[in-house]
Amino acid sequence: MTIASTDRVAAAAAAADRVPTPQRHNRRRGNFSRSEQRAGTVFAIPAIVLLLLFVIGPAVVSLAMSFTNARLISPVAPEFVGLDNFRRAFTEDPVFTRSMLNTFVFAALVVPLQGGLGLVLALLVNQKIAGRNFFRTVYFLPVITSMVVISLLWRFLYQEDGLINSTLSMLTGGVWAGQAWLSDPSTAMGAIVVMSVWQGVGFHMIIWLAGLQTIPEEIYEAAALDGTTRWEQFRHITLPLLKPTFVFVLITITIAAMSLFIQVDIMTGGGPLNSTSSIVYQIVQKGFQQQQIGYAASLSLVFFCIVLTLALIQRRLTRDKD
Image 1 (cartoon, one colour):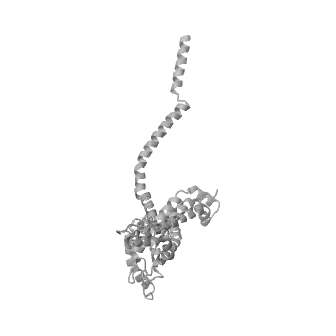
Image 2 (cartoon, one colour; image 1 turned 180 degrees about the vertical axis):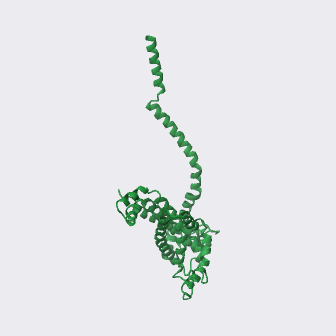
Image 3 (cartoon, one colour; image 1 turned 90 degrees about the horizontal axis):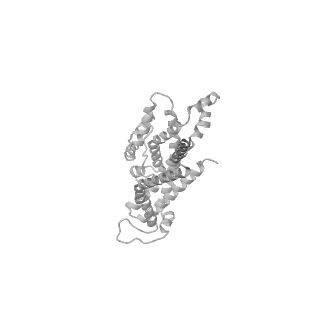
């Protein structure tokens, strides 16, 4: 009897040793976490190096050069000029002032048009209709096409004897005499806006579509049983549940619109009369063509501050209320 009791006690003690205590479990989990941290650090090192070399490093150099009169190719060493570049940009450079105005006008037109039209297309291709995959593909094709190619194509379309003027002349029975869309200061920016909206609307259609597909169908079915109309469902169900998607679309379109460059460079070259010049276009012109790299760096800093301010304002206006 005593021997059996002793064996049971020994077996219980061995089983207790095999059961991990909280301290032993936390110690193992701590060791495992440290190994994970080391592995994560090793995997992150290449990304950190690339980020330092190609993002943070150039940004710091650009910030330092914005306070100098450095030129791209010059035997003369750059000199510190303080805030002279920024004073020149806002008081002595009317082209930069016009470029800022053009950029804001372009963004003010493109953001609601591209975002709203993308939502409309997403609602259409989200319906259970025949051929909806075909239309999704057609609407998305301009997005995967090079902006350079599209800009060249639309430049030919906008010519006085191009397809757009020929179609308008045919529809009006010859009354429409033709319009030099890209050579007229009153229509050049509008022409670029139309082309840019057409090119980018498919991308945001896909984003809206992804947001729509996260809304459970049961919600619409319950709303239909309550007798709500399609408009009421859109207003009280679709729009509120699409708020995270709306924030993403708003910020991405704004940043893309503020970085307007390729369309201007290829289609109009900033003209006529600087009516289509943008901030990024001016930065490239000053930095590379005119080799005023210090002045271009100061314009880049101004551009960064503008985009950052707009992003913060949009984030504050669209964030969830507590």
